[in-house]
Image (cartoon, rainbow, N blue to C red; front, side, top):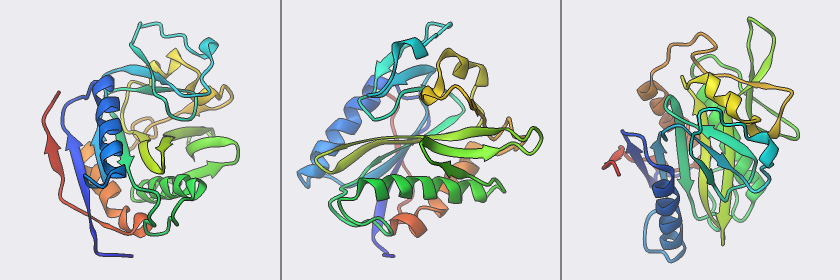
Length: 229
C-alpha cells in the first residue's frame, strides 16, 4: 500500500457516450506517453446501449430506439443510463497498483471485481463472482434469484486500461429488457433500489473511494468536477 495520491474526477451531468470514448482514448494515449496522470472518472450516461467485441446482433431489441454504440471493449451488450454509477479507469498497467501486479490483465479484472465486492459490502450486500459469467452478482433474499448488480468491461491498449465498471443504483430496470445483458439469458439484472436499499449516489461514490486503496494501493484525491459537455 502507498500514500501516493491518485486523481479522481466526477461529472455531475450525464455524459454523451461519444465524448466519453474520445476522452478516454485521448487520456490513455497521454498516459502511455507519460504526459498526464492515471485516473478514475465517475459519471452517468443518458440511456443507450453499447456493444462489446463479442456482441451478437440478435441480442439487441431496443424498443425505445435508444442510441447504440460500438464500445470497443470486451464483452457483449450493455445498457447505460441515469441511476447507474459508471467508473472509467485509465491506468498504466505496466506498473503495479496495490494488489495488482504489472502486466497481468486477469489480476486487473479480479481487482475490479474485488473493489466492487468490497463496495457492496459497505451496504450489507454480498457480491460474488461466477466462473464464465463476467460481473458481480448478488442473491435477492426475497426471491432467492441470483442477478447481476455490476458489469465489468475493459479495454487495454499497449498496457493502458480504459472503460471499467458500472453499478446499478436505481436505473430504469425496464431498459435492460432492450438487450440480452452481457449475452446471458438465464439470469436477470438487479439494483440497489430493486433490492430495497435506499442508497444515494454520493453514498455509493464515498464507498467506492473508501474501498479503492485496499485493492489498488493509492490514496484518492478529492474529486475534480468536470464541466458538462
